Length: 505
Ligand SMILES: O=C(O)[C@H](O)COP(=O)(O)O
Ligand SMILES: [Mn+2]
Ligand SMILES: [Mn+2]
Picture 1: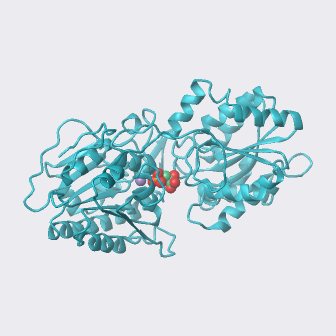
Picture 2 (picture 1 turned 90 degrees about the vertical axis):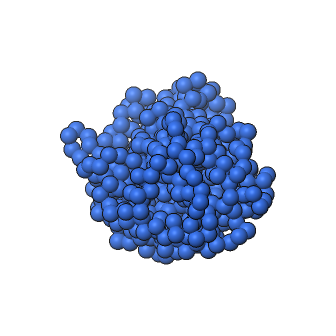
Picture 3 (picture 1 turned 45 degrees about the vertical axis):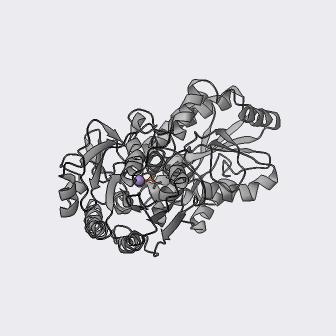
């Protein structure tokens, strides 16, 4: 252990790279420390999207796959890709569990309820997967398919929900089956903060048709004063004036999101109410729900990475992030293994109740910075791993000015942490997990709209050497898969056998 050279791995969430220009909040921000670090020879750009990290080519990065790959030291086929593969090889059409559930509906005259985010944001869901599920329902002659469409405005530009609802309707017309039964903003349906009152609004609309009544799905959008994300749960009524889609005993509910974190609160809530009434539950990909919901597509193994190697070498680490990104520096970075690995300590900086990140772009960065400092000062902790959430979380609001301020708060924190690192004899490795705030405008049809989503841009990665340490200049193309081998090498340890990335410094 004495040979281990202590360090800090600091993930700046949503820290992407793009040339300065309109909508680049990171380039516009006054960030003297980050600018200085990025100008050193130890700075490099790393691929953080598409096939470099295990996504389909050209797909924007996200926090889950970003942290999974940072920890695994290799690209890991993401759930979205595995779903696409099962669509392409016919595995979904011939899936036994799905087939049995749909055959059951054909026999009883029940309904299939498809619940998921209706956009092509490719972070939580892809509306094209819904197209395949509608086609399968038609093949099985399912009598009725009710679509519970969750509007986005976060992974895609705000104001595009009408377009995505039209796509869903087009797919239903093409398959000859399926009607939109509810339209619900993701703020309600995909809450992950534990605000069960929001989930309840979504669950009531889906389960028993309680909510604002509408004749056509598009009418729901008029309530979105807070944008597509906050469309009030709208319940479509049929010719008889009754809600089209309450879930009846014996129906089948299939969640179409491939990413678990934001749908699982709703999935657990609906399961709790409906599973006892003979409703069958399925999910397109594997979820981390408490409810035992069978998945149609299973996850790739993401183990054998940094956490396993640290445990094997007896190296203690402390993981620190605020609530929004806590799972990322623990569960995802550890290859989706729950609970702390041996010799691992977790520090979760709880949210302070301020939910408008535009008004408080500093979030809890001071408390996170203090916690990193406290861990770094401990001689028994060779590795501190932390996430600074501001750039990504504030970036998601689509508010350019607030995001500039988030970057400036981040710069101030990084400057303080450089002093901590040097004062405690540590190296510090900074890396983004995907792009976000370097692109705050997105154009379609000649119109630029505020954009709070992620990007395909590379991310900066930079080593701040420990006092007296030489930092080599990295060569070749870097990716997030190179971070775990780099961290191990900086600690003075070799990579894990499953890692395909390489040490950059
Ligand atoms: O869930 C969210 O907040 C966004 O859709 C994706 O952001 P994340 O990948 O950074 O969590
Ligand atoms: Mn992220
Ligand atoms: Mn994000």
